[in-house]
Length: 264
Ligand code: NAD
Image (cartoon, rainbow, N blue to C red; front, side, top):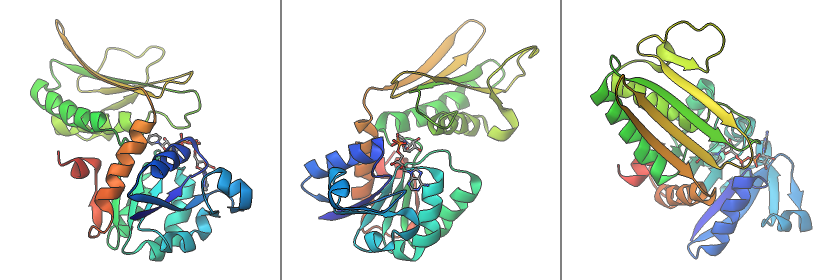
């Protein structure tokens, strides 16, 4: 039985994960982590015996094999700052997006002592798309084909462009052997002038209940290639995170991506 603690347990992804864990015979929810400590009926309504604050989560971590985090960057920071020693020898699955370079460095440091799997998107299809985007960018080059990445998400999403759109942009940049920071262009407005060769454009649409759509366009003078992924249900991401949790439980320390889990 793999014991799992959920960070962000009260959120949309947290509750989707909780339902899937309850249905799985080999998984057990060992506790919840969120903004405030919660106990009694209020905690049980969220599927937990108790919920601890991210800064005081060590007791729940110690009773778990894996911590799955779908929360917010501040929550992950608190978890890493106060729970790093409890996480040693365990596995941490990170789905939270909007992380900065300092957060990534903290995850690298934890990966000396724990198995860390992070992904901007836990769907099998999107991870396949990352490989296809890199390959297409390598084959097509940046002289004859311009790349624009368009993503759409529900109105409640707090970061833009999405972590997945950035991962796709990085995949294209890798395929072209350039650094994304040097060619990235977020949106266009006003007198932009002609499009510079090699630019990678990122565009975010927000509205309604869109679970997540990503489109990578390779635009040539007389032909165009589009790679598209549309998520129909958020349980897709939760299922992928649980595949990662099963894979990571008991695995040696290190920093892994979803492509390692899937064996791509
Ligand atoms: P949500 O807003 O519904 O839930 C977030 C939860 O985190 C809430 O329960 C909230 O109380 C908690 N939280 C926020 N700040 C906190 C803090 N400082 N300390 C402790 N807890 C805190 O959001 P969601 O839709 O469930 O998404 C959560 C995260 O997962 C986002 O970053 C989202 O982009 C990401 N996400 C990733 C994937 C993926 O496949 N990697 C898929 C979907 C969502």
